[in-house]
Amino acid sequence: MAQKPHTRDVEQDRGNWGMLALAWLLYFGFAVTSASLFPLVTPIRSDLDLSYSQMGIILGAWQLVYIGAALPVGSLIDRFGTKRSLVVGALIIAASGFARSVAPDFPVMLGAVALFGLGGPVISIGAPKLVAEWFTGRKRGLASGVYITGSHAGNVVVLAITNSLIMPLTDSWRMTLQLYAFFVLSIAILWLILGRESDEFQAQQKARADGTETEKAASMRDIIGVGAIWPVIIIGFSGFLASHGFRSWLPQIFEAKGMSPSTAGFLAAVPAVTGMIGSIIIVRIASEGYRKQMTIGLLFGVGLTISLVGMLNGPWLVAIVMIQGFGAAALMPLMMNTLMEIPEVGARYLGVAAGLYFSIGEIGGFSGPTLVGFLADATGSFLAGIFALTVIMWLMIIPALRLRESPKPVPAQR
Image 1 (cartoon, helix red, strand yellow):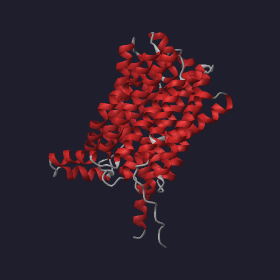
Image 2: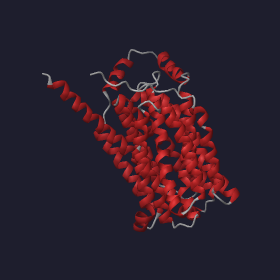
Image 3: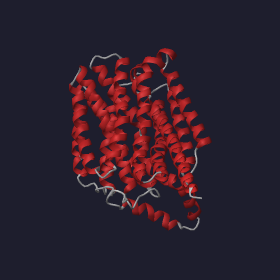
Image 4: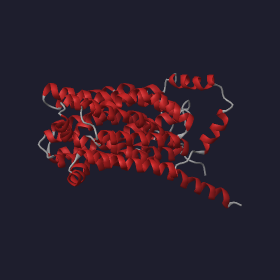
């Protein structure tokens, strides 16, 4: 009899990590699609006769749609659960990929990329909600760092192999995008087969039948009124602006330094590689009670390294790019973990809170690539955009000072 609770715990742990693996794979497919245009900017611009400003608008188009979609998507995920929501999100992302591959001109490519803004928030909100439902305590901090590595891995793969392997095989940016879209479609099918809802959500579904519409609306008003979430959301805005603005143009920044497209793609993948390590380590340490200090350090360090990327070359450039990726990757999962731990939010209302976070954050996600592209056209260099991103990161230290301190764990009594 004494063995049964232990056996159930082991089985539950296995289920948790299995669901985390599926969430990781979905975020991998999300990143494959979102980053697929970055190494293909040069042939796409040439084929569709696009300016840097037009390409910047395309790169930021899905973030603009995301801004309006994230909050209602978060509410829908809270209501309908992660399994059904994530399947639909993955299918929309795959459709966006296929549409990009057949775009004949600027308006169609803009619409194809904008479509991603409807599916993207389902993944980026649904994945942390899944973590909040399936994990608690210290495991939640670890899981928050782990699932986001799927995004970094997707970036690494796309940046590293697109120009060096896939393009030489297909000899077509259109066929390359079609291969990526088919891959995401396969992930959606896998999630449909293997995904499941948490016991917590199933219990909530049964209880929801007894609730009223007024209570459901009040929960959203209550979340918006929680003062502790706003420093998190403001910092998230800066992280999205710097991340999308910097990462979207990174291969072209390296090409402007004289690198070949293949070399630029490999080097642009380096931050994603180190980011996979940084997101796990930093979020794990921060979950022990050092969120505010870690956030301030990240904002300063990421801003500094972004500026140095614009000024350096050679081995020092590689080293700084590695450091930049290590720190920058941890900012988003650190903020999401902070949201999960706010008592007024928790797992139950994380969809609404995360929707608000991503909705405002993607204003920065849209502004970043557009700002850097505009400044590159205006000045003939990426330096002005790089330094603008640096200043914005440093300004976000001000709201970081108002983050709610997380309690340090108390050692277990023997």
